[in-house]
Length: 516
Image (cartoon, rainbow, N blue to C red; front, side, top):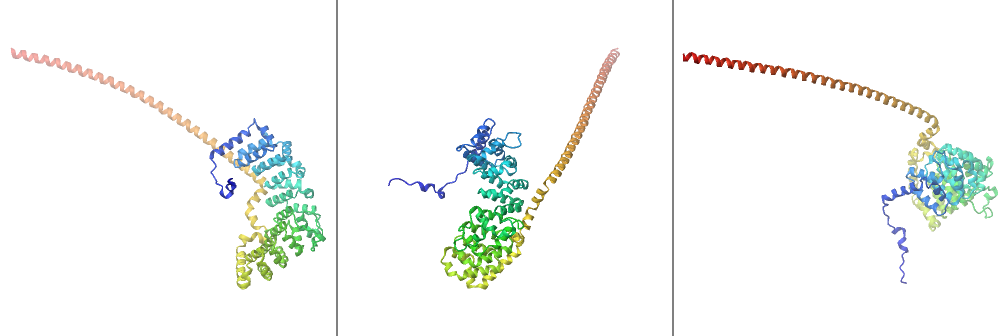
């Protein structure tokens, strides 16, 4: 009774945030530099396999991910990438990937490194990609590596190595690797059709007549027969989707329209009863939402899907998962399809109001407004549709034609990637010419400076020499003038003395004459 409860102090809402001292970052860099020094590089790489030390190294690497130079030094030390080598130690990388702790370390390295620096690492495991995908720990490293790829050549290389083995990957329960390949294909718009063919072949639905069974097979990641798909009395397969299957469908819903043809065929062929079962499933409902909201799925295919779901919309609205599918149908439907959907909900309005999820659907689909003022509801929807059509090139262009807007946004990058080699060569040539021109200018400038310097020095010397001669001449003139002045003074003194003597003599004579 006297024990004080302290567990409330650890609640997130009572936490206090404090500023991290700037000295921590400096010390963190110092620790990273010391660990990655040449003296400890072997010991550091060995610690990547230690179950206690590996998590600390992962945290350190992710903490300094903003410092590219430090990340490169630490990552190279962990991968045993010697200075001057083209890539890391291949045997060591394979050993890390196959180890439980080492695989987590490799995932952290891939996450921290820049995408442009992943090519040497990918090259180190290229010949063992399929073998690593089969391993329990290493397949996660391959997934992270594929998720980080950003260039078309690297995606082509991955498709070449893993594309023909999609059947084996699904058989080994490695759908995560297939999903990562699909996301990479979406990012760079490369290899989508190839991956779709591989998936169809793996599920035994390659023939056009078998395409209708693609969606049910994808959701379960196994071949589904027509009898199983048609089972609606509980005797058929109970589970309609698995999480990885749903994620794969969501990824393929982002493919370009030309590449996702088999999936669109299957979507148009499935029955309303099957769609109801999928919509009521946690994983399956996400797949249907992705198909409805995808910019690549044609508008006609979406409207046809909404038309199939409308008869069972009232039942779906009461379900935790199905209610989200109904809301997605309302958002993506045109005016006619929205009206038919709301009318189906109106028929079960009283029952839906008593259901938690049904009430939310009625509120978001504005069922009550439709019941009270149908014309006002229709006018509001028309205005909303007009706004969408007016601003289709801004908010709905991708949904209208599938690709025009994205191509405009990424046009420059696509062109640069397509003509990368040619532009690089031209750029190198231009850069060489610019450098040559700059060097020539520098040479000319230096020569001109040297010439100006030499001329200036000569002028300074000439000026100095002329000044010296002038000074000497002036000094000589000054001496001569001084001597002449001195001689003149002497003559004057002699004349004055002579005159004085003559004056005295004349005065004496006059005095003697007066006395006489």
